[in-house]
Length: 294
Image 1 (cartoon, one colour):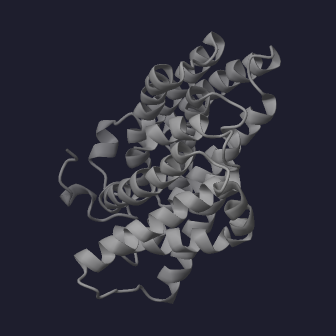
Image 2 (image 1 turned 135 degrees about the vertical axis):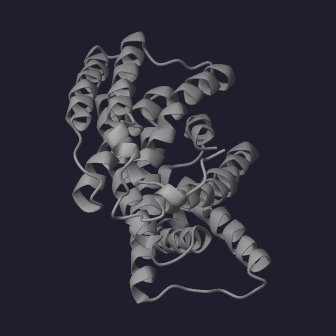
């Protein structure tokens, strides 16, 4: 679902500006999440305490609002595959944050992976200097990766106070509130946008925002942040294939090489060693009790 959002944004970037696209996505997301809450909780909403609400709101502003805006903006400059490769540096940043804030440690492979990924970033940047990619787009996509990592760190803190569905609903609602200044622009652009772009925005709210974030939140409750983030390593490959099929769009060869090197670096960071498997995270005491993901 997350891979498809890269393709949808590229497909309809000309119809909807970053702000209106984010508003439509989050509005459809919060409606979907509200319906799920009413159905699963039988109309009884269990809100967390003040700290949980504040963390959920911060998570929503950072990830659902600001990250979505920046992510949409990147779609106006770069192809879907290059954006995916740069945004998926986030697991490396998350592993660094996991060591700083969640006691997940600083294994040697963290620094080795960072060095390898920097080489990949250098190649992608060089592709930008040749005119094949937009340097502004590269900076925007890297900013999105930083926001992605920050949002995930805040999400993990939020999930200490509430369940994934409630946390996602609170965050999505906070994201809508943060994007209220874009409502007038959204109203103006929706009247001129194609039906396909509106359907695409609604799909991103239902699928990648509502459903995918609930699954992601469940995984975040049961496993260390860095290990969960490693699952996103498959996203760039899926994006490149989908963009090639639906958009006839392929990143420049040098950017693909750089992206692969970046992901190798992230993979080095996430490599499981016997020491990691045998150690419980102080931030997540139920790691060893969790069932293996399907």
